[in-house]
Image 1: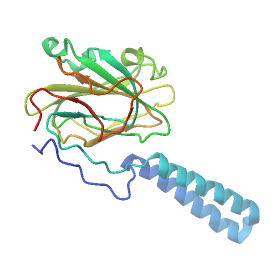
Image 2: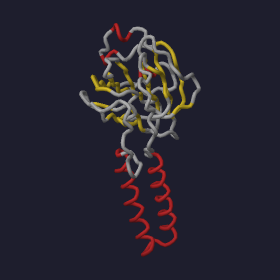
Image 3: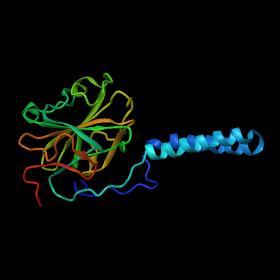
Image 4: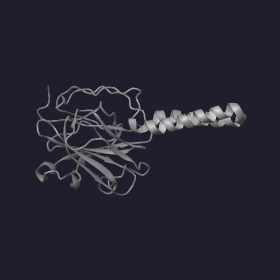
Length: 238
């Protein structure tokens, strides 16, 4: 299994691969409009071409996937999403994950709300093996509402660290976000901070900390995926 502290390789250009078809489509249309404007459309075509170019640049910005400096600290639970912490408190992971009740009892949920201006790529909070992936259709309430954890569409991962600690992480769709992308599959080995999916147009990601592990962040804190440490697992200090 790869080291749980390895920094995933940078992608270049730094754009999430799910965004490439959209970016390419905009660029192709832009090129076509500009070509036509030079031959026949004139200034209206130039205006349309400029608008399409602006949309192309917006798509590049929207699907940006910058590299991050992954903390090398052993036992660190790394933030899976850019955004603002909207909840820290008791919570049990989604039932469809089938987490052992003895492990689920006493967990702490840390919720990060992502808006449309945040980077949308999600990262694994810990290094380990993906023990379970579970998708559940649902509603599309505002993701900042607490009830979104139970009622909204979601995709959940259960990552098991080499030390045997279960860390669930849940992508939750929201009022605007209607598209969850999860690349991880059961049996995959993930490094801490590894990219594993995205939620288009933001929304929310929940991380569940094991019993007895306190959160290092508070509600209202601005956090960065792949860099901010949410908590430290017992015995993980190096």
